[in-house]
Length: 345
Image 1: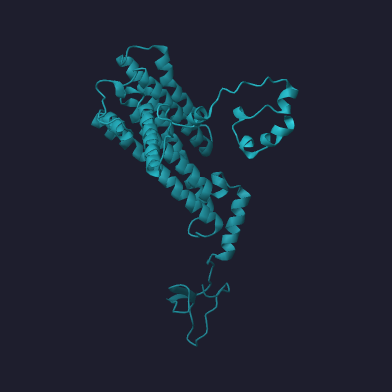
Image 2: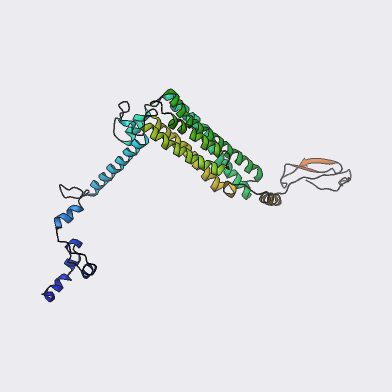
């Protein structure tokens, strides 16, 4: 019998069958595994790969159907993301979205933000945007001066101005972070959502402590720490909104302002690291002296002392300057002499 059924057991039909339908092998016997009774039929195996347990059909039968399913899944994911950003307050009766979608939920929450709060919030971010743009521009100028491409500015001066711009951004970021934390003290004093006591007061003072510590750091690590501080504070505000400690629009309002500030920080870090000299850290005095010596060699300074009578004449087309200072010629056509020899400058 074994000789009769052995060719059938080695056939392609049995080898390609599901594992549950294959006969036990010697490995199972050697390991002591008891063979399971075959309780899985072909219809059940097919049903495991079907999206619908009722019809037994896959979720996407055509390309158009698959595209529609992907679109619905992406839309559902974005809707859940909008709910998370808003802190779940869209279920409150006063914040009802017209359409349960990302745009619908975002618009419904945004319309509840008082206009003065929205205007002043954006206005407060304008100096931060300006400081970030200035930092990126000065980093580019400092990098070009270090390479000798821009010769109209000393690399030491360019680096000093860049450092001042970075310090301004760090200082203003510390002020913003402290202000956002202090808002929780105001909500506690007003009893918004009830008086929470120490938990809300500690939430309000923590950003100020983080912001104060970043001022003592170098600009680049300080910006990174502030980015982490803004991100962590928004998460805390999101949880506070979910717990009804804040107005229902506060979490989403804070999210988009944090995205704006975070984009400025990342832009400053990226621009300074890419264009700035030595990745935005400083120059050593020796490095500055070497760069200045190279600049002087490529473009020597034109200065000196001319003795005797001098005159200023037009440089002409062959000259590299509009005016030429030289010794005044005498009556016989020779240049007058003085205490010091000199030439044309």
